[in-house]
Length: 294
Image 1 (tube, rainbow, N blue to C red):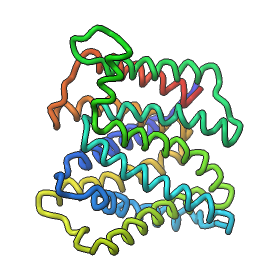
Image 2: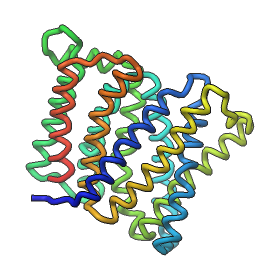
Image 3: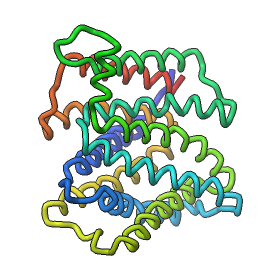
């Protein structure tokens, strides 16, 4: 049986809460604030955290072979983060965040194709449970259970298409990360990825005019909140990774995000809270444990 220390558990829980807070702030930003501007400050808040971590740990090694996979990884990360913000601004948190359970599922397939790492029978069961949970989650209220009904609900959400893009991109990045780590230390890899994404956003702002980075009064609090919570979450995640299995921390973080998508969706954005949603998310969470720790 896998064991986890109390400090690691506390860090994992805090990390999940902070990332969920970042989801809330990014969704709460007014529609007049461009997604690129929100991401610029959200990623920018993480830069000093990672730079400090690299200096503290001394993880500065890197070689020329990093360039190719590193640039592709950063491009995928930029696209996924932008699409994520678009998705949660268009549709309910309680429907879009659970879709991210498909990221480790798709990552299993990508890992098999790119690295020859195929899923175990326990992970196969987890995939089935996640699919079943999503089927229940997307059932329309009061309707008879059916695949067509769930599919119609899924298609009707304007955030579904960009979130599917997020899933595809984030499913590829673990394999790319593994390739990158053959040429750079973990700390340097993390710093370079964040720096590359932030630089791309800065160049985009320069092309459009630096005025696009100006934040209106009603956007300052949610954008600032996203930057602060994103930086703190990343910092706690790094500490958590240093004292416990990465997969274990990821399970805790994602489970917290699933549960808080229900709570925040209801409390902050008046999203419906139904028994089907609760049941679907519970099954998805159980499937995630099998997929990520199987």
